[in-house]
Image 1 (cartoon, rainbow, N blue to C red):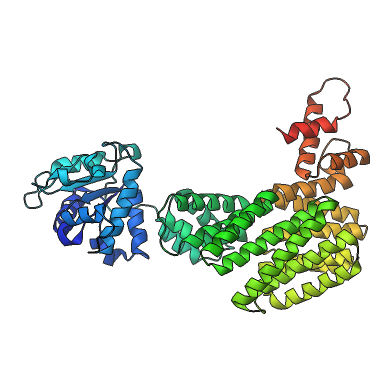
Image 2 (image 1 turned 120 degrees about the vertical axis):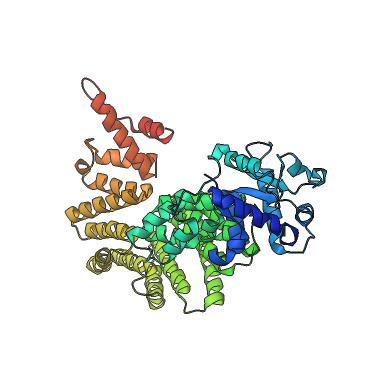
Length: 530
């Protein structure tokens, strides 16, 4: 159900608008007009106008000054009517017929309708005399049927029982701790209700901050895609150009990295950085550069041996650029520089895994200590650093020291994604100290947590680790060491390996007679293109 929004020019349309409000409200119509602005006190008047034009049937009081605002961009009598005229053009652009349109023009008796622009002449024009009320009955009937496809115009039926507006829900969300379960419920509700709402796009940081605090990659994806669609279909205000860059870097780049869509993540990070540079948003440009460096570092860790050095060099160059940018923005002792130092430590660890030079491991530990001095204890970045320090202990074969780091992260339980990764790293440390049962238990816990967060790649990686250690815990298929090696040779993606094993398990259960040995190449091809 739509409400009504009255658009008019103050100079010569205010008396008619006032008379219409006085007649419509007693008859149950839910009316917005700027006479209510002092009581409504919106956070932003342009946003209030946009919401009215987007969500309500617009009653246009046509007057000579309103026509001048509609026909030219040089009308300077009032900024409000000029902005409303732009919103009206945008609304009419998406509707082509005279009926079923949620724009209803109203003129005074004697007004020459031939003076109306073509976009309004294609609609049904109503006449209303504010002195006698003539024409109001016909207008009211038309308003009750306006926007029939959307359910007509909303009628007030007593005290308001409507659900909170998007703006009210956003205000409530920003007052809550992002880690609260209630904040996550509110964020999900906002994404369900806020499609096309520019206010939600402007509050992208708040909604996505809640989703990230809970590790909800699906919510980050839906929020990012919805906000990008809203921006592409809405006239942007000055200063909002950088919002797209932020959504690309902090939204799309974030979830693509966790979905292990690395090539796409690199392209989005690069696009977001360029967009931020275009609108001179230096902080988002620095974040985009750091995201880009992180993607290349992940590619180096998962790529073929002959590709790793290339990806590491690309990552190193971008990381140095990010450090320079953050240092210029917030100084050499900022948390962002500490985050760069943490990623630099991970870079040196990857270099150590590539060539085995222990000097690289020493550099990694030095960078990790530098990062710890800059990061705020208890924060998410600090917890990620503790996981990294455990990985450094694993590389240095100091398994008990490493377990102390990740056990602290697990016991804190502050960030679901970090806790899941900590279980994974502790399992690897347990393998180093020959505690096979503990390793299997931690891998299973990591898989369960990643699966709950819908991190399919990470969950499949933990599942595959269990399959290599104790396949009877997760499948009825008797996997031999030769099967494991062959599947790893066929595909580097643990999701594909897992699906191939489960496909063989399912088909074997339906097979009659003696079971035949698996054809892993055929199964991998089947699930890869399924």
